[in-house]
Every structure is written in C-alpha cells, then in structure tokens.
Length: 256
Length: 256
Image (cartoon, one colour):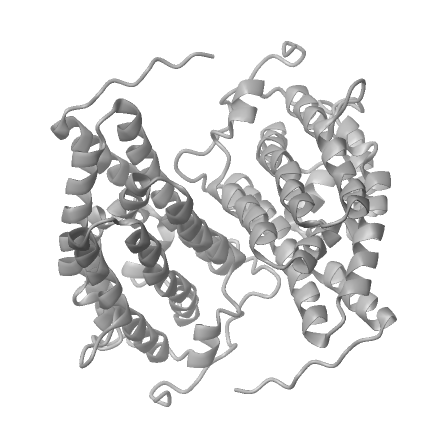
C-alpha cells in the first residue's frame, strides 16, 4: 500500500484543516456532553463526571510543565507558564484545580476521595496518562499542537454552563466557577498555540504531524466521555474498583 | 483520613490475595468475553476484537523488552527472553504475533490495515500504552507483577477456543493457532513471575505494590473489552476515526 506524499498547505488551508478536525471530533458532539448540558443526567451521573474529570484537570499543569521544560527561551516560557498559574492559582487567586474541587464539593463528593484518584475509571486514567506521555515523548511542535482543542472550547463552555444552571437544581453558579474564566483563558492560550503551529510546521510532514496531534487529543477527550457514558449511562457497566453511585458522599456544604 | 499500615502476609496469604484479584477482576468475567465464547457475537464484532487485540499482542514483546533491560543477571534475562522469542518467533517457528495475523487473516481483515494500527479504538491504544508505560516507569517488582494475569489465562483459553470453534463457522482451528501453545507458555511464565514476586516482596508495602500492579493489569485487560463492547455491541457508539464494520476486508483465503 502506498500513500501519496502530502502537499504543503498554505496558512489558511492549514488552519481550516485544524478547525475541521474539531468540527468533526470535538467532545461537544459526544452524547454524554449533550445529555449533561440538556439536563438529562442524574445527580449521580454528574457526580461521576465531576469525579473523573478532576483527574484530567489535575494533570493539566503536569503536562504543561513538560512543555515548559522543553521551551528554550524566556519569552516562550513566560507565555506558557501562565497556563500553570491559571490552574495552580496564586496569592489571592484560586486556580482551576481548586475551583474544580469546589465543583466536586458542590455536587456532594468527599474531597479526599476525589483528590486521591481512587475510584476514577481506568478509561479516564489511561486517556489522561496517554496525554501526559504524548507531551513528553513527541516533538515539541506536536506537544503544543495537542493543546489546540482549546480552539473549540469557548463556545461549548457557555452552552454547557447555561444548560447546567438551567436544568440541575443541585448546580449553582459558584459550583461552576471553574468555567467563568476559561473562555477568555482558552482563547488567549489557543491563539498563541495556533500561531506557533502555523509558524513552525514548515514541511508537509510537520503539518500532518500537527493535524495528527490534534486528532489524538480529540480522542483523549472523547475516550473520557465514552468511559463515563458506558459505565454510568448506557449500558451502565461499571468496571471493577471504580466509583459506584452512593459512595464517597458528603452533605453538600459540609466540605470546608 | 488515616489508613492503618498493611500487615506482612505470609507466602500462602500473599498468593491467595493475588489469586483473589483474578477471581474478581480477570477479563474472563467481562460480558464481551462471555459473548465471544458463547457464539453470541457477529462476524463483524469478532473482527473488531481481532483487530484491536492485535495492538495488544504487538506490544507484548515491547513491554517484555523493557523488563529484559532492567533484569541484571544473565539467568534472569535468559528466563525472560523466552517470552520475546515466543511472541516474535524464530527460525522454523512462527511467533505469537504472526499467529495473531493468521487470526486476523482468517476473519477476513486486510493485513496491512491490521498491522498499521489505524482504526483501533482509542480505548485500546490508551490501555495498551498504559501497560507499556507502567512497565517502564514502575519498580521492576511491579513490572513483573503486572504480568501475573497469566496465572488466570490457561483455563480461560481452553474455554474460549472450544466455544469459538463450536459456534462460529468462520473460525477454524488454524485461525486460532495462536492459542494452542499459550496455556503451556502462560503457566511456565506465570510460575516464574509468581515465584519472583513471592520472593522479592519483602515488606508489607512491597506486597501491596504487587497487588496494586496486578489490579492495574486487570484494569488494562478489562478496559480493552469495555471499549470493544461499548463501541461494537452495546450501545454501539463507534468513536471518530475507529474501524467500522465493512472496512478493510479481504476475501478470506486471499491473504498470502
């Protein structure tokens, strides 16, 4: 089997090809995400989502630290480190991870249990770990390209937040505070990463590697929702050792 | 939250604890495996299984090479390298990977497509890659312990082979030749690995790490069947870019 060599795309074609990947594969298209924002999930299913996604959130600064370690100028590192500050917080400013814990608090999950990672789905762990490994092991260009799913997130966040506030009486604006700043941060971060990829993919093979990295990352996000959907929605086959509805609960408001 | 320190188990207790993990979590308990051996899958679903499991098979000698690289005596390496020979083959003796390709040939899948890994489920890739990474990154004791699922495979292989031959007219004994030698190889390999773990886990924490490694590996196997079941059986939601029934087929017998 022979594949013809890919042609070099101009800047516009290349950006269009990147955006097309999101249009076809971003996890906003996943049935679990659609049920989540349409109010079609039970409280237990929303708890499963919050619990599992904590592991993803907790690993974002880890993967960004690996990228930071590979950037070779103070200018590039200053730009990228903002992502880590956003997630880990700073004096007087809660970070994204702390806000995600407010979300798991808000839906009534025990905080120590959430942070421990016990009870997350193997599908979550394997997908998130695959992302961290990808960023460590692939080229810097591919590692940066794998962050480009944020190109597609700002609109989705608005729709999801609005839908969840409207449909779930156990969700408050404070519970979803994580998402308040994400659209602005995601736009800033993805503008930078997109420009980097458009600029640094100088051969057809590099363009193809960037496209493949973005597809990979879409798979990482999709696989996490697959695991949630299939374990807790349909057919509802929870794998051994994973969290079961009713476990690790606290009275809402009881967490410090 | 405080956990009491684990106690040191004697040899019998420790082995019993290892076997109990398999009794509760080995993938022979997974609905997909049960359907497979009971003849309840379609040809397309068996193709999906053969295609995806090829990626697992192809990575077994990779993970064993990482273990080989960490064994520090000729005696230990001579023992462990037999696993690589079994999978990669030798003069006059087909290896396990070649036999698995005979299986994907036998169910009518295009060989180049299978070997390329295109079309495998992200859930397969992430689980298998998690296994390879585990073996690279954890202690040697944990890496060896993660192979102990083979303690549970010999009986299961017999049941599966018999069931598949009985129920599927598109499966022949030659198609399943991969499994002919596996029970004997698996017993030899797992006897060695079990003895190694019983001998080298000398502190309670090491025993707990061995147990956790075996649980992890059960999750790796289970997650692969989860991905197959949920994508191709129920509810049958195939993720973007994954193989779809009807793709990459050849006439059976046409492959060289």
